[in-house]
Image (cartoon, rainbow, N blue to C red; front, side, top):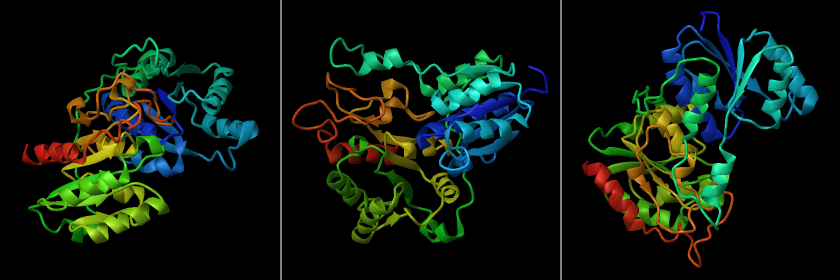
Length: 343
C-alpha cells in the first residue's frame, strides 16, 4: 500500500472486544508504520490505544450527539475530514453499517468482519452440535485488514511491557519478593461469573500463599463485595472504584498473572502482556474469544456435551441441576494457580 493510506477502524463495544482490537492494531501498526489509523470507539476505551503509533482516537457518543441516524451522519461528517482511503468495520452492527454505507456512497473501499455466525450457531446448538475450534476473533479482525490489501500477521505472543505504577498504588508493590496476582471475578453477564461464594474460597486459599491479590473490574455493587474480601483476607486489595482505566492497565502490566472470567479482564491482561488463568462456563474458548496470546491449557472448564451453549454468556448453562460453573471446584483453581506460582 502507498504511504498515504489512511484507514478508519470501527468497533464501538463491548469492552473486551475493543481491547482485542487494540492488541491487533499494536501489531498492525508495527508491521505497517506508514499507515495512519483512525480508531472510532467509545471515549472510555481510549486508554487501550494509547502508545500505538500513527493512531488517532475518535470518540463516538451514541447516547448524545451521535444518537440516531442524524447523529451517525454527523459522525460520518466528522470522520470524512480525515480523508480516509479505506474503512475497516470490525463491529458489523447497525451503527457501523450506517457509517460504512455513507462512506461507500462516496467510493471509499469498505471491508467488514465475518463473525462466523453460522459456525457459532453450530457450536452452541444442543442438537447436532459441531464441536470444533473456530477462527479466533483477533484473526477475524486481521482478515479485514488483509481484505483491504494490508500485510498483517499476528504473532499470538504476549508482549510484556511494565508501565510505571501509579503513585497511589506504589505501596501495594513495596514487597518485591511476593508474586502479584490480579483477580477479575466479575463479568457483564451473570452466567459467566464463577459463584462468588466459591470465588471467596479461592481468595481465602490464595491469601495464605506468598502472594498479593488485586481485585479488578466492576461497578458499585461489585466494589462492595471486593471491599469485603479485602477486609477479610490478608494481602488482598480492592482496586474497583479506586483507579481509572489507564491506572488499572498500568497496574495489570506489573502483575505476574491474572485470574479472570471469560471477560474484559482477560483481554486487558492480554493487552498488557500478562498471562491469564481463565474460568469458562456456558461459553468456550473454541468460539474464538480466548485472550490474545493466552494458552488454552490455562483455561479451567468442565467437559460436558451441553457445552458450550452460549457465545456471549448471556444464556444460562444447560448442563443440568448443577451449572458448569458450579461443577468447577475451588481447589481446582487454586491448584492451577499454585502450578503457575511454582512454574
